[in-house]
Image 1 (cartoon, rainbow, N blue to C red):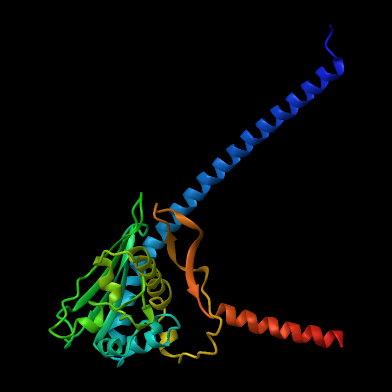
Image 2 (image 1 turned 30 degrees about the vertical axis):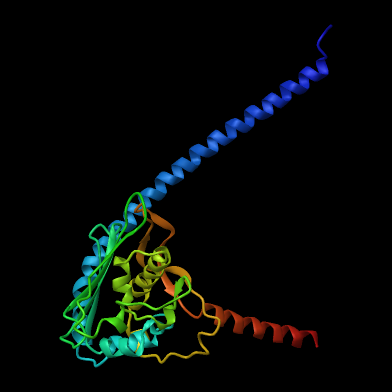
Length: 281
C-alpha cells in the first residue's frame, strides 16, 4: 500500500513547526543568557559605587554622631517616634535607652557580605557592656548567619530585660518582650528559633535602611496613630544595596522601607469614591 501523501505532508509540516519552535526557544535562551551577563556586570558596578560611597559617608556619619551626643535622649525619641521600632520598647527599655550615646551601622567592605549594627552606651546601672553589636553575614550557600553580643546584665537586672521569657502557648508575646531580646535571642535554641530570627532580620533591616540614614526625620515627628492606621511596609528604590544570601543584587537593586502606605492609599481611594459619586449626581 502507498503512503497517503496528505498524511505525509501534514507530518512534515508538524515536524517543521516543532523544529522552528525549538530553534526559537534556543535563540531566546541565548538572549536571556546575554541579558543575565549584563545584569551581573551592572550589579558589580553598583556594588563598586556603593562601596566607594560608604567610605565617603563614614566621616560624615561620625560627625553626625558627635552632634547627636549633645542632644538629650535623641535615639530614644527617634525610636519611640518610629511606627515599628517604637512598639518594641518597653517602659524599662526606655530607661536603658537614656544611656544610649550612639548607634553605628557598618557594612562589610565588599558591601555584599553583610553588615553590623552597634549600640554604644555610657556607664549605666543595667549591664556591664559599653557596646552591644548585632552582625548579619550573608553566606553564599545557606541562610544568613547572625551573631550578637552577649549582654552582661548586672545583678537583678537581667530577667525583665531579655534574659528570661514568658511564653503564651507555642509563641512568645512580642508586644510584652524587651527590645534587648533582639541581642539575646540569637544565642537561644528552641522551637520558635526560625520565627525569632525572621523578626530579628526585619528589625535589623529597618534600623539599617530606614532609621540610620536619617534619624532626624523621626526625632522631629511625634507618632500619630491615625497616620499609621492600616500601615504596611513597601520597598522602593533609594539608599543601600540590597543583596540576597548569594551576594547578588535583588531585582530592585537599591531599597529602603517606606511607612504609612496603606493609610494614604485608603484615604485617596475614599476621595476618589466621593468624586465619582459627585460626578454621578
